[in-house]
Image (cartoon, rainbow over all chains, first blue to last red; front, side, top):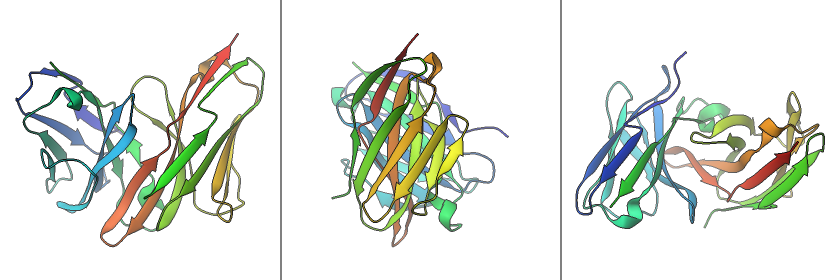
Length: 116
Length: 114
């Protein structure tokens, strides 16, 4: 069974540009969440999608957005990049609202974004 | 505000030692507590605990949750150099339209020397 696939793995962008990251969840998983990981702040929740709808959003500016497609694949977009957006962006895949296992999440390898 | 606190923040041991990592939490709408191991990139899933007092085991690793006292421990026995990693504790909460937001602790950096 394939795991969570994130593309691209590495990205270098210039301040002011925008970027789109992609995540394909585990087959059969319908919920996708995104996290930002930095040395100073650790892993922080960005947003959660299920059934093409954003279910929850973390404390990030509106420059961070996302969406989910009917096949459960998800993308996140960061516009007007700032140096502080340099981070590892992780996508987590879970089954969705199935009872006690709804929070059992598996992570992709991440996208390392460097803003210069 | 939801909070997850891990201790110690770092730990250095020798192969064969037993270690105990701690995780305490204060979150609304608690659903589960999860442990992950992160070596280079992706956090690798170790355990998910939802019921208090029931130990989960996988080889040399085990974990238990105390929902009354709001904490969990992760034990690693007979440590090996391959256990060197950052161990992350996360609490899953669900409420309203949200099913699976995870709030993470800072992580414990474990270094196992030969």
